[in-house]
Image (tube, rainbow, N blue to C red; front, side, top):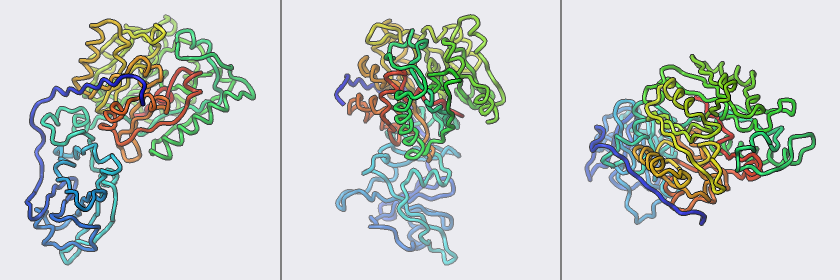
Length: 483
């Protein structure tokens, strides 16, 4: 991880304070809090494993009312002579039904917290029900929301985007995506006219070795997402007859938005269809896929695709990088991102603010899609501010991102390795994972990776070098989120 220079900025413009906590603590009894009908407990002395039973006196001394379920937390990977972390450094309640703020430190393998669960018996004592479950899966299993934050004791906790999303039930990322396997992939001459990330290769055709090679890469990515991280993938395919060599990049022609998104600005669940610059990319809007999407129950369809007749284009979440929680839209104005359509989209969808700019790559060519130079997760944003030449536009971009996110700035060279083409998804436990290619992962510096990991449970990556080189798009481009 030596390419590029790490410029990491973190600015949370919040207010001091926080949420009321339901805690009990004494040096003699341990520490506890109750949320969602489950009492989380630290015992006063380290337990070297689970106990078959816990006495009612032990539970009562920790300040927990008798009855109900008990979860004893252990630092199982601490050396015998290392102190146990106070519960208050691991979790803090967010109030109401919002769940907990959880320190992202517990996502590190050696810093994980283990849970032993007990249930009350008629005698008043507690019997061991399950042993050795990781804290985050335990919370998910018990339907207790978890907002990952770098520091649960931060004075500005309540102003962090992850916490705002949890308290308002707005998600930045989804566990469900739509993908199209590159079963008829090939070099797309139409798209290459303004995509300088592409390299000339064979067109689609029978017996194509390029198609088979890209399919093997894509299958590895699909396995990483579905089998390793538990992402729910709606998988389609395409044939030569479809005439869509870039069909594996479906996020450009549609997006989905639940009611309540954008700090409440989105009033009803909406499917959006977009105008595409290239005719063979417009053909990706297949009726069969649209029908499947409509069956998911969207109450509104916002169709911008008729603008193709006016030669005005706006290519979905390729050109839109959106902060779904705070309601901020980021758009790099280009041949594929019409400024007037960006304004119309922002107003129609109920978003609060539109930030526009123009960016260029290492070859001094305009960046064709915003999602090549930046990405936004729940708590972290990745951006190549260096690609924005205008000082005012660059400052406005960084200022807006820094108000809501920890910002990881990447260099032009790192953008060329598609470090900006990442997407946060939810894993099978409903927690954020940052997905990217292995090329991108290897191009980040150690400090940049650490910054990203402060806000996600893991980084998912797979090598898709051929797809990136020929198609000019990365992992983010292959996934269209379904909300």
